[in-house]
Length: 280
Image (tube, rainbow, N blue to C red; front, side, top):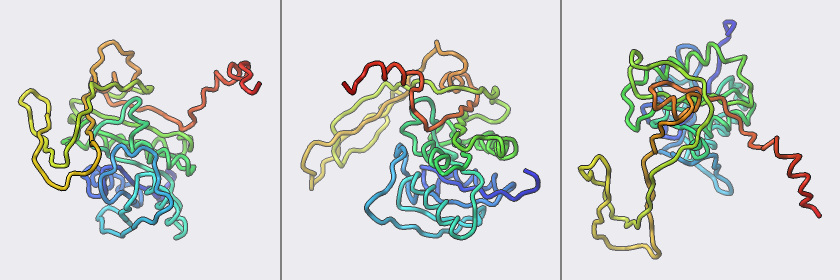
């Protein structure tokens, strides 16, 4: 880092008061000036959506590990746009964008839905090297390994990471001594044993006693017109996956690091599609 004080913009999709962003902010503050711009509430699975044609609130908040912190009544991608623009107008140029630590993994095709990953992709769209960090638990107990890998990215990836590329890091929720290692991976196909069922506004979640959760309906008034549904599911466990698939790395107890890009062009297919002469 050549003795330079780095400026890091930190965001997430779990909301500005989530434990994960707090832990990552404290870790990164040891090596950089941290600026936080994060959603005011949870915006999981918001993908790369942005707020258009309507204003949204931006409020300054206090954060002990940050030079400056604001909550945004918008999406994770909104937060990166706002943070980069506002800070640039104040003479602060962001060197890296970090998104996380997310409560829950962001593996394989889930990266298309993930607000955490797509916030980092927005950083790449702003020509800033970006990193997304996630732990495979909705209530993580072990932040240390994720913070260590994030700090390693600052030390070893800054100045090397292509500005158009995002490092997507996922870790199992285990102590450092139980982490089997790190695999450098590619995205897999994330599949779910999913369901969709009718929903009432008064539904409550309740343990079924079978390791799952079922929903029960509570009577209520003021029912909305039209049928409402709720969607959910559990990820499918696959045994026969190649070791360099991010999903397999997680299943085997390894952290995975996957470089991803926002260019979804199938470059190998361009000439073939041209030969179809679709214009005729």
